Length: 466
Image (cartoon, rainbow, N blue to C red; front, side):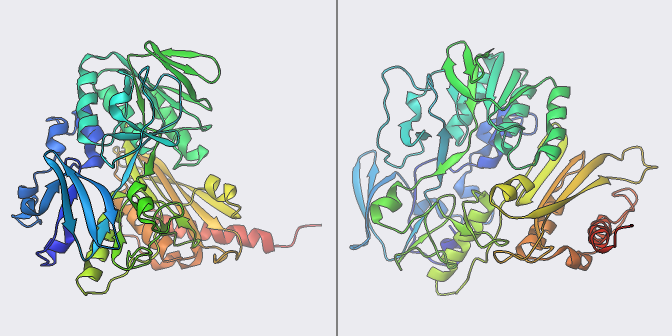
């Protein structure tokens, strides 16, 4: 689509699913923020705002079964047979598919794993691709419009549900199904809810779940799905009408593997989004990128980043050089009016990766104390302890916020800039803080972070009393 917007006319887009605003699907199921339901989130390409009005003529609905990069041909399966498409340049945007752990009872009896043809009718069950139609009648995932339609119907008749996984989608679906009147149980194999947050920040999410009547089971996994609900690893059971697996996604690498493209965690690309083949580019959830703070490879799985990657690839194909600089991971969401964000490395992830860090947890407030609408929350900043592996001492590598009432999208963007610029805590005074009593508290949190960090350094250098 970026190619068309840049004036390139000879473009073919092979689409194997309905164009959908995927990140909004939980809100379509919940019907509080999107009252029309999931159908409102299916995009009409002829009315796509900034898209060319004749965009639909470039879209071919089907599935690419095979790629011959040497002869530059794609073989696509349509309803009326196989079609051959020639190309000069190719952009792979095969995305990711939902992942379900290999739990007994997830599949219908008699079903078996099969080989993918790249359709959006697949889930990754353990390490193998399985048709969604083989899932047990009470098992659900959420990735595309049909998944949301199926969950929407379930929500109108079900009374209770188990949500497995507490990432952003798991938490959003917990709220959505709660909004529809279901009794929701959420199961997380980690010791706390939300892998994006550290335990201290996640405790605020857990408290809110309890306040809203959502039962959270942490440190356990689902070992069996039955028609009556699930069995947990500690032997306990939960009765429920349905089980939603929100346990993440895996990159769809089938075509890339068949082409012999270089892969590690995902498809390897350079800063121009070019793969190991000079005429093949790749963008989106199947692509690994460079993490700005550490220089390590990562799979960010972020839709807005995929859009930027597509623009970079299209620019290079049309002869306008562009590069994607190193980035980092981020996530922003809300849970029953509790807004949260996580940017870069958490303390727990850094410890697991062997990165020495220190943290500052800062209480913050949305308004001055005299304002009755003011709400409390917390910032957490993760800082490198020492020079190591390309990191500076005092470099900010992670940020988390959990706060009542106020969206945190702008705040997360600022820390995304700070972290990708590899700024240290001593450089945070470059960032100014505007104050309006009706919109924020007078205390400058950037100053507070700076002085808090300086105080820890001073206490280390101060001689101990005899």
